Image (cartoon, rainbow, N blue to C red; front, side, top):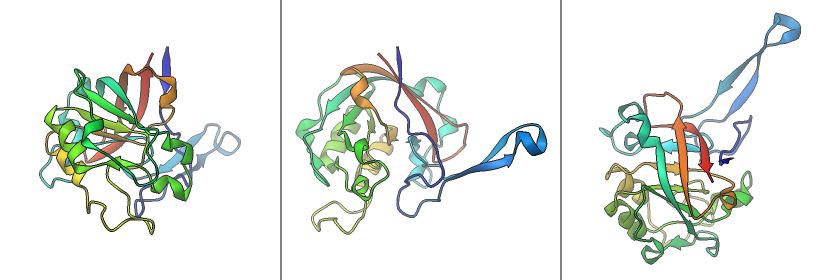
Amino acid sequence: MHVDLTHPITTGMQTYPGDPDVAVHDHASHEDDGYRVSAVELGSHTGTHIDAPSHVIPDGKTLDEYPLDRFVFDAVRVDCRDLGAREPVPAERVPTADAECLVFWTDWDAHWGSDRYLDHPYLSPAAARRCADQGLAVASDTLNPDPTPTPAADSDEPDGFAAHHALLEADCLVLENLTGLDAVEDRFELRAYPLALRGDGAPVRAVGAV
């Protein structure tokens, strides 16, 4: 059985603050043209997507430099549903895992499309380093493994993109904005093939095998 863990791409969908707006509209129609074509405008980090090292590292690898099998992960789900808004995942919550990816399950996808979605839990820098030290990719059902800037941000939160840097500098890929993690087991196969963009990131169709 396969479970779709992907947010659909739709006009006006939520994005990281300042990222390009998303629009999907008719370019050709059955009535006028005899066929249908949609025009799609979006950023490379739209919706459920994967980050390549070049996202935060000027000379980092781009997605096209990875073989397809790097986008198939033996994944372990880490239950973080007890964490509240803007609460960090501490290093001690990161398991020692004989796997390829840790999937942090916060249930924050329940807030998708709202302002509250921006005030998600995030990886502490120490937690991100612990993942990187094990060579593990990281996925989550949040907008960002780092805290997203909003008016609710606390002055003691880490600045910038510490988790991104810790992971991507170690060649550990990052997947963001998963949804529906309640439908998979604690260990599952995660497939997340990106669009064939030669760059810093791309939307994926994330699928869990259960």
